[in-house]
Structures are given as structure tokens and as C-alpha cells.
Image (cartoon, rainbow, N blue to C red; front, side, top):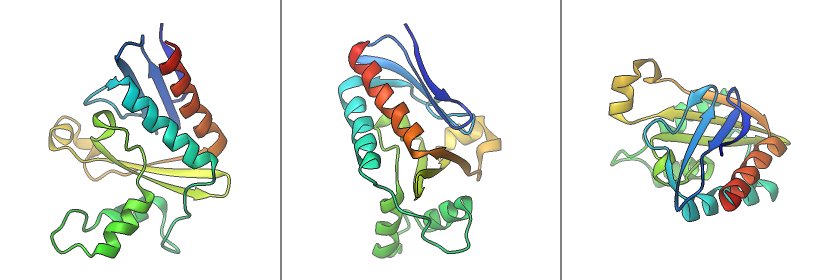
Length: 167
């Protein structure tokens, strides 16, 4: 039995029948995020999702770090020198401070940042795999932005963890 949580316009998850490996499809900003790999190893994925929910419930997340820049422009600026040999350590640590959706192979096809504005979250996403961008050229250079109430996002994450535990 499939469990569907959330809305694809903001953030949604569809979870298939549970086994040690389980199909999990994720969407944000109407983009299918798990298009490269939607099979999760349940114990690891569930723990990672719950860790994110606990972090957010405890007030985790920081505001946009650059005054006057939009969320998409901030995402691009954080990624400007990512992985370069001459990337300053301070830039690396700043970028890591905002990274989110680090839930294993299922979400490692994209880069996501989370910014908290009081009780609202802004999540930015971009796809980076060459093969994905060849098949979806419209995603090349695109930054997708989602605004969602923190309580709603945490509720979806906790619902995912419950569904993965109970399925």
C-alpha cells in the first residue's frame, strides 16, 4: 500500500510497501527529486529523515546569509566555488551549514539548502548529475525554490518515518 504525504507543489513523499529496501518518491517545487534512485535502505533513510525532523523541531536552520539576495541567488553563490581546489575553508563551512536532504544515495543527485525565516522554511534545490542534465536540459542551471511552513515540513518528515516504520 502506498502512503502519500504533502503536496508536490511544495514537498511531497510517496512511500511504497516496506521491506529492507523500499520505493520512496520525493517531490519539491513539482520536480521529481528521486528520479535517479528511488529505492531506499529503510533503516538508514528513516534515521536520516528523523534526524532532519528533530533538528528542525528544535529550531535548527538559519536565515539567508547574504542581505538582499534571493534564495535562488544565495544558492548559486553558495555553490559558486563548491569543490574547487581553491575554495576557501570558510566558504565550505558556510555552504555546509545550509545543506539539507542528505539522506543517502536517493537524494545525492541534487544539492539542497535550507533557510529558516521564523516559522517558514525556504528550500533551494538544483540537480547536478551530468546524465540527469542530459535527459532534462531544462534543469541545467535551474534553482528550484520551495517555501513551506516549518510545521508542515516536519509533519511530512515525521509521517515518512512512521510510514517506513509501520509499512
